[in-house]
Image (cartoon, rainbow, N blue to C red):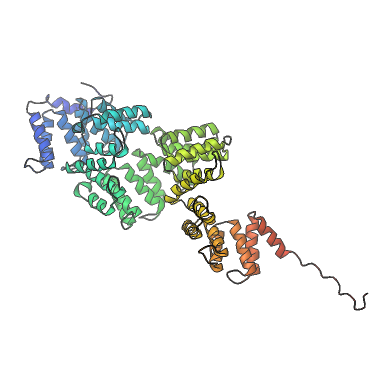
Length: 594
């Protein structure tokens, strides 16, 4: 029998009292499975299943111990009891049962009745995977892919995904595992429709995460058209009301108002309920609500406290949020050394966000010495962990020459990597590089394509650039009305240049757009209020000449002065012109002058 490398006092006590699996325990196990699944004229009866699993477990059956332990920590038909769950799962694991090891790993992953411990989680998964459980193989692949609880190794991750995919579906402990493998394309070709089919079957079989997963797929439109109302229906089923994943998903739907009425207070309550069930990610969202004032009054100190609770559950994003709050002095005294300490903890647990922020802190010298090589190493490590924003930041430092020599070609390559991962700012920068020939041959068609990608994600700067393309007839036919539509859409998000571009169209008119000086004046005012110097100079000109409203020399001078102070040369010339003393007039010529 394989012994584990940590003490199992409770399991040892149980094992001492348990017989070797009795002759009838297999029959009990079969009866328990039948009660769990139902069928053949028998209604599903989780309470009866738990009773039979317990009898088989007491008789010494390690498989029954694993099932009973799972039911106890998930509250499947019986009251939750994390302590007893752990006892049975440790007993099953000590007897070398793959399912027992797998479910014990879940306890350490989520902190159910034990302190969350990602290293132990990964170690238990490996033990289970080596004994042939495909679910453990797949989850171990995830750990290796993300560097969570173990060293990151993408090649080994792929090998475990492939091994899991080669197993018969009947060998999987949970059909939900097959669902997410098909969703992500892990070991199988990516197939959202099959993912949804497996999730529905998992729900039909009474699997813990099946209904919650169907709800998420409906909310996000995975393998089926997005249907938030149906997602709410699934997430409010009885089996989901004690599932922190379902409660959290429902909370996010209400928080964002995606396809349902926004209910921030209800979202906050759902996050609290999920947090009480031991969900580290729910602790994170409770903290986020306190930090942003969504669903509850803004309370930075409570946000720090809840982010710390999430970090104690080893929730990967919480370390970065704690670091930024310590850096900015929100809810705590500013302390960059403490911020860096949180980031180091996150780095040790495989948080790509924490590694990215270590690069950012190194770039700016916050709690760490400025060091170009180390900065690049952090950003590259985060990028290799598929943190798309790190590719954008690498592109930025090579473009601007931040602590490293400028390198337009390498900058473009990094932006392009980020863009391929859907990072919206990187998509815009690739468009800009193609438009201006920065690190790549100038190509307006490609520039337009990347601007469109970013605009489709709501990026106002790309919307404004697309407006310029339509206004000038680059790549697409000249269309001032479409340009104005794009400028105003970007302007609605507070984009200063877009307001100025719209103002110029209103001032001069264009095909399909009548000159409208009052609208031009208002648009310039919006742009100027957002800090654009050239728009301030235009406001000075409008007040000086009385365009779109009354003339006002004092207002004209005030706007010219604001623009001049920001370095606008035209505004400086106008200001000097208006404030220069009048030239003295010469004497009147005498009437008798020759």
